[in-house]
Image 1 (cartoon, rainbow, N blue to C red):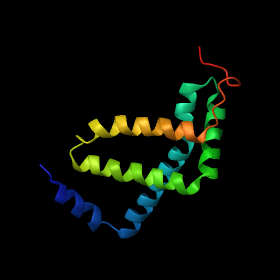
Image 2 (image 1 turned 120 degrees about the horizontal axis):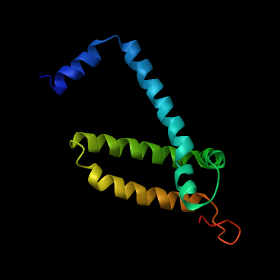
Image 3 (image 1 turned 45 degrees about the horizontal axis):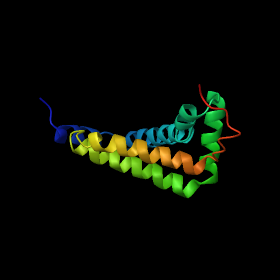
Length: 121
């Protein structure tokens, strides 16, 4: 049976360049996924829009608010790391809180005009 210390030693004993490259690649993929989903998922649930429109709205929201969105992405990453340290028990509390906070983030970033927006049936 392997232990966490064996895994950490294995990862850190490898060539540092590979570790750094994989970390950067993972960060880029995470940033891309954050950018296209931070607003698009709640938007798809709230309004009758296409996936493309939702993704563009999400990218626009991130582009217009880079500092708060960077903070939000880092906060999600750090709290997720803390939940992993607690053997994932922290997710029981984190997921509902993040869902609630993400909904309010969406409502604050996307202009809500109930009369002009078609309701989802």
